[in-house]
Image 1: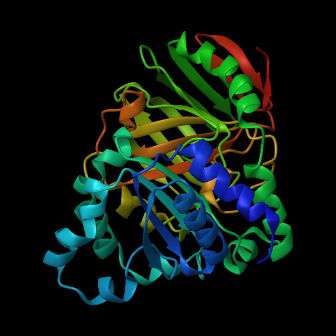
Image 2: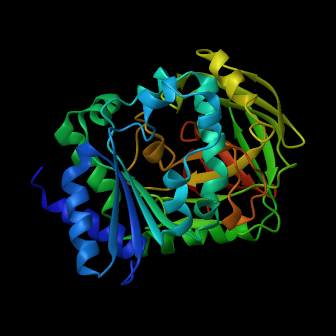
Length: 358
């Protein structure tokens, strides 16, 4: 792909998102289909006087063929040489470039869960940002097909959502985030949905050219025991580990999911909720604000940033915003508020129909 936007994208990742310094060891995990971006990143790291540590894959992020056959004790205890970079690297760039977005369905839930649980203790620096990182995607036919687009159209969409004036976007989103920082109780109301949770005492993070690319959200880890009520994720399917679940409905009591159902693939939802003690708690409340993302594409990295939506993450909390919940799972599920939904903050309506009132 000979596209000048690729160099702009690499510059955004290396300079703005990570601010790479001379001598840094930068781990670059990437699918091989992202070669044009990988090489641009490598060139820029070299110019910065930093080390480029490549970790290439075929797209799933796991060694799928190995994981399907390896004994459980190896899944539970990853090879020391495999996890060593997470303990020693200064920065990490993760570039998703899948050949097949549903590849992980070839790994049963128990094996996937063991892999995730085994790796979890070794990636604590990711959650605390002691290891600076940024995750992104590169246009591939699989991602374009999932989005219902041609490859050229998907590339235009991806670069358009990422190559924004992030300083201006941060200023805009910080205005909304300040109201939530000063607030206590958040209420999400829509058809089939009336859920309250607390962010009291927790300061949010504005994602504008930071750890996720595209950015375009501000987010919190709600108080772990605060979620009460129901929420219906009926507008969009929720995709996790290559599986698609439709019509998810959750009921919370004192922060915990006590009842769950789905219109499609309910068994997977229930199995995931039972993977560990932390999955049934909320790890994140995120509010999407990216003006270039207006439609759902079964691609969480983009879908959670849709302007006029919120997303809740089941499972692992975010320590950088005070989250304390621990889980091998962090499953972002998007709720559309643009058709009659609203957000309330301490009893005041701050967003209605996806439009801000503050």
